[in-house]
Amino acid sequence: MPKGKKKYSERTKRHATQFPGVYQRKAERVIGEQDIVFDISYKKDGKKIWEKVGWKSQGYSADLARQIRNERIISIQHGEDLPQEKKKAPTFKDLAEKYLKWSSENKNRKGIEDKSRYENHLKTRFDNKRLDEISPFDLERMKSEMTQAGLTPKTVSHCLGLLRAMFNRAADWDMYAGPNPVKRVKMPTVRNARDRFLSIEEADRLLTELEQNPRTKTPKKLDDPRLHDIALFSLHTGARASEIFNLRVQDVDFKNGLVALRDTKNKDTRYAPMTEPVRGMLKRRMLPAQAPDAFIFTDSSGGKIKEVSNAFQRAVERLGLNDGTKDARQRVVFYTLRHTFASWLAIQGTPIYTIAKLMGHRSISMSERYAHLSPDHKRDAVAALAALGDQKTIIEIEGRT
Image 1 (spheres, helix red, strand yellow):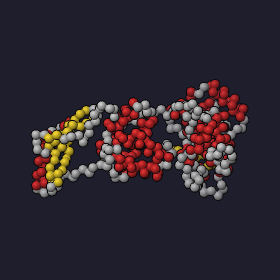
Image 2 (cartoon, one colour):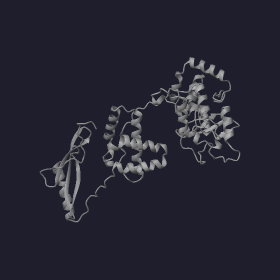
Image 3 (cartoon, one colour):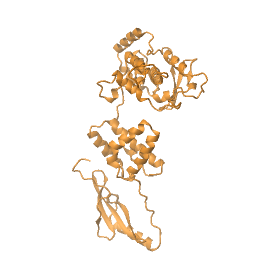
Image 4 (cartoon, rainbow, N blue to C red):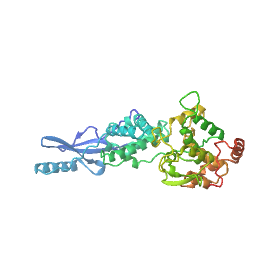
């Protein structure tokens, strides 16, 4: 919070009113708007009880608070039960400790990202607040402060997404039954569109690099070029990483030259034509005795892969593909392979509708971003394809749409 700006909360000092046991205090019910909240106190079984009555802006007054206090005292005198005292919600710190432990155990690398976002952006803002004290107005203020500090909409969106997930988990774990404040906050507009795609020469270099051992300075062939094969598959089919990790033996149809991609994002299945490099790679990886439901790509222990290895990014950096690139959206990452697939198709004159189908886009508007690729790019692509001949990076899908 900027210096010099006083922060009000429901814990500000109480002031006695003209009525015994009735107090009022200044607070912010809506950010930037001062209000007055009324409290009452009374004793039961020798114990002093404090109860919040309500806000002046809601129609409460000191006199109405006095009447409610009198009702409580009469109920106590007649041995009647008082309104069930509201159980205090846990603090954000309590939730964060539990959530981050769960996140580190279940979300792998994303668990590290969750911890970083919490410590950098959420901890000082919310740790001392109870969950029921975190309002949509608090989150709007956080959005504003983060934006003014020069943080990107994507960073703000990630923090709000983490908060939403934390409140959802609090409900699942019976820690908090109140509303999720993030549901009433508009997410910032994030421009995720990537313009950067690989040239055929860059793609060829990257695939060659991925065939080498990323942990040694002296290149040597790997016994299991798994990362190379995953990258090759994405580059030749436009598959998302999650679709590749879900690929099973039964999804491969060598007879018709098709691979079924289970679209985890849109909950749909599409069929990708096989290029010859993909066919050869799959035949090499798939064993005749494998069960139909066996994963084609597995981790070192034989289980399902959960995320792309950091070795991919190390290979990209060694090749200098991101040198001088400051805009994170234009950096080469694994998703760039999918974007490159679509860009190459557009350069070769493939209709946008066909690109949308091959990419698994629900709306053709999602593929229209590739329409800007110029005829000059097409000529360059044709020349490059002719020069490379049957190099492994060429995509041949004509007649297979």
